Length: 325
Image (cartoon, rainbow, N blue to C red; front, side, top):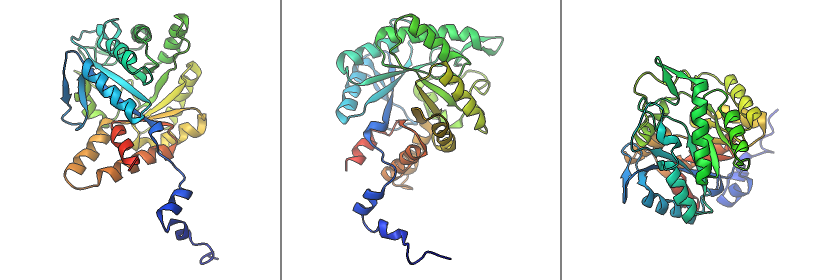
């Protein structure tokens, strides 16, 4: 028997104030992390062609961009570095005077309250573009861990607030956690890219970070997009190894995974609204096919609704302005 006309759901949709009162999911500036790319040089801000509105910044320009984030109330940035030179072992990734290490010091000196997160991986720094050490065409897991530890410690020495390993090597969270603790950095949290998929949505990022693999692909270490149960196993391992925040990447095609991770673990969950997701919205909006503001906010709200506590997104600056309107 129908409950209509006793119950009419439209009653609570009649006007904006009613909708505000019963709204279940609230997106705010507090949820947002803005990714930035940093390069060597001075007075440089190179727009990324496939990611309109995003730039490769020299450190002097990066600091200005960081000040803008702080003025908008955005709590955090995550940094990706483009080195001056690349080699087989990604030497600049763990150089005390590497691009990221310089960037961290510059931001913390100028905008100390902005939370600085650093991506820990080798792909931007290696001449082969893979996330680990290569031997006979294979990405070696255990030897790579030593280099990830060196990179993490160099970021800690520079003053980073959060370490975010994205390489997807087995055991890297525990290895990094032990090394940080041994060096007196037990206070630095780890945001683990726990369920990072071998996704086709990363294309524009390859341009932004200049990190495309020079041969093969990353499917031997990043996850198969078809798998969800495996994501829970990956997250379990990272939690047991000491991760403080776990991440699902990408976001939109993996809302079910975000939901399962949040439900299963009840701990802070990050989701990365990646470059391809951003680029598709920007391209469609530039062609007049969609309303960029409405689509972007709907997209970000869906990620929050799925269970993400924080969202890494290139829409962060725009979203703050739109939410204030």
